[in-house]
Length: 171
Image 1 (spheres, rainbow, N blue to C red):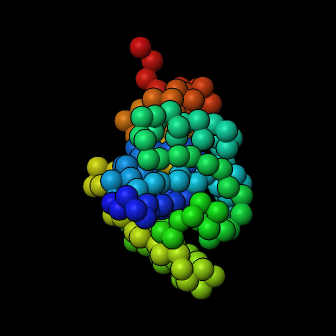
Image 2 (image 1 turned 90 degrees about the vertical axis):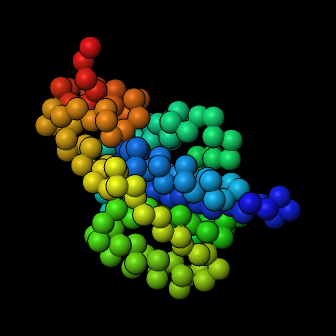
């Protein structure tokens, strides 16, 4: 990392909710770049969020507490415009499976057409998290499953509140 020219990268997503897989990608990006801005999309157009943007930001901030080079911000416009506002020339995205690759491949080409100066870096998911997704966590919780192994404690607690017998284990 360069002290004369700090490099900022963004890690955008809906984080509905943040999973341990998301956190792994963010921490790995923070080890490569000087400054990480985790961008939380306010209202994703392709899905209706379960958690408010305020909850999603709070979950991330709590889980990332102590990480000196990571900040969390909401955004509601094109990710390329968000990157420009943050002074980022790099966007970091995690890949779990072929289906992620197909979507990210399309989005990467669209973003590169709109903002050729923005480079997208893809980070392979840790095998321990390659099957964990926000939608899978919500589905598991909605059917009474324990999600505490896959998400930070505050998320598991909130899932338990929303879904009743799903979410965190009862003591």
